[in-house]
Length: 113
Image (tube, rainbow, N blue to C red; front, side):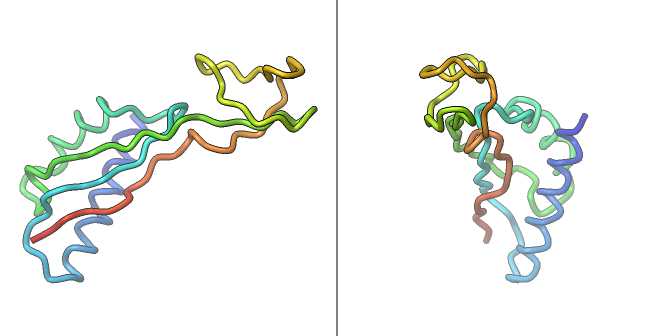
C-alpha cells in the first residue's frame, strides 16, 4: 500500500512542476528504483494507471532506471554488491553493513508538452 502513497506524491509533484512550466500534458516520467527498494515497478505501474486518470499525466509512459545495491562492511570497510539481498561481507563475513546504494525511489525527470 505504501507504493500507492509514494506514487500519488510523485503524481502531485509532476503535475505541480508541469503547471509551473505552463505544460498541458505530461508524456514521460523517469523514475529511479533501487534494487533493494521496497517499491516495485509492477506495483507503481498498477497504481499509476488508476491515479493518473483525468489528470495531465494520464497516458504518460513510465520509464524506470534501476540502481544496483551496494554496501560497505562496517567491520573491514570493504565495498561490495550484496548477492540476492544478503548483506554479508564477502571479505570478512560480517553482517554489519552500511547501504550505499540500492534503496532509491524517486522521480528523476519528466517530459511535458
